[in-house]
Image (cartoon, rainbow, N blue to C red):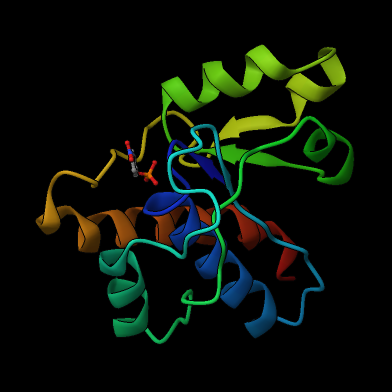
Length: 141
Ligand code: 4NP
């Protein structure tokens, strides 16, 4: 799960997908990362932590890190939140195989950056949750 700062959106996506996978007995390894380095080493934004907690998900122990090229090797899928994340990550792809792993979390819609608007954390949580549910759905039967 990738966004710009790795403190607002991708930590939520990481926590929500991990929660859904566990709840459904799927042994998926979920991680998150950012394309910008401002917050590396920090925990998630408090507003994301609080919103997740209100939905019964603990993201407080996540640590912000940068996306790295080796993530293309390690992970099967790389989900990004918006089109600028998409172009940033695609610009790091070494080949078509790397690029094929990258997709917008919401398919054809974006998850907007809530960083400058406190009221957007709950709607962003719901958007991400809906996207994660859609992704996991085919694996539940
Ligand atoms: P995120 O939000 O990409 O959802 O983690 C942001 C967090 C911090 C910054 C930008 C976006 N920043 O510029 O510090």
